[in-house]
Image (cartoon, rainbow, N blue to C red; front, side, top):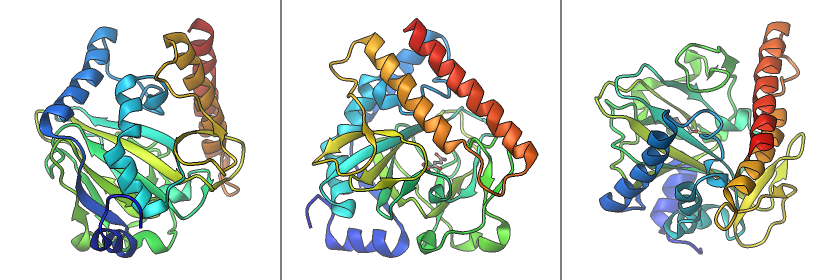
Length: 298
Ligand SMILES: O=C(O)CCC(=O)C(=O)O
């Protein structure tokens, strides 16, 4: 097998659906990336907003470098092969003492990708401990797609508050994937996972990078993705890398990518009730409108 994971690590991922910890950055490097991110927040006078936290790699050098980090991409190659696209990134920041949490859910239930080899690398840029609201997973749950309800609950970091009903959960078996800054966990996109509130006095910052085998088919409307290694055989539109792009070109590329994603991922499922359809329509319209505005003023 190509890549940098050993047979035992690959077995663990295949049988349990996750792997952790995987060292990526040393503590100084992790601190440097955190400073790069927080430097941008200081300069703009607010934390990364929802749009900046989505597909950040099209906007910022720090994120562009991380999605191309050879240690990360090598680990991913061990699991999904040598042709790799980055389909999305999400910055999950929980402010110190915040009630933000992520309900137990499966990503595969709502992402517009038809593939089984989709892996998230969740890189810690601050300590991810039980107290700071580290990610917890239900081992071995990546073989079946479970029922999921959209709760739109307050403080839930997921757009729809997607939640797997408690009868499918067995909390006594949950594993807390504790990480030092610079370490990553890997999880399969069908794995049941979530996280609790941050009760510490530091922020909890996780950068989640979603990689897909570049032969994946995409469901629904066309979306875009970034080729990070090998050859693209998927039907995703390929994105232009941020590095080497002007500030203006970055903003445009990001706005276009988000529009494609919002149209696709925030469309209601066939069983959605009227209130949910209306809610999603509002979120979609707001997101698309904002992205047009950003593109125009870039
Ligand atoms: O950062 C978290 O707490 C949740 C992350 C998550 O749901 C994911 O990476 O898929």
